[in-house]
Length: 171
Image (cartoon, rainbow, N blue to C red; front, side, top):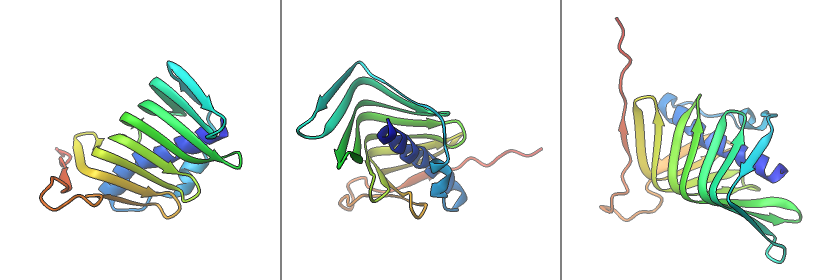
């Protein structure tokens, strides 16, 4: 369960990238580390592979910590020396946080030792009416830096970053 806590904390900061990109201020990694909420994982199926040291949740996977929720078709956790090493979320990855908005992608990877979260495949960040899009989002939890970019996509292949910001109406 500790492995899932690290996973949720990482994706919570990934969702916070929306705020980071809007405000151009770094997200503090400690923000996610201080969450003491219970972690809940539900899925249609769980499979463990003791030889490969992996556990895979599949079918309507929902991981919840505090008010942050991660949904994906499958979530696979790989361990090294009984510690989480990589967490892979695949298929329709959605991270929702009421404070920071919603981040979506086709796949997500959390490299636990390096503290790096990567969302790939038609990444969309939404907060209110503001929307940012790009092929890849990388968040370094140690530095709080977020990068929404092409992820090495070839020029002209649709790898550009797009943003639409709606100003607040003041009366």
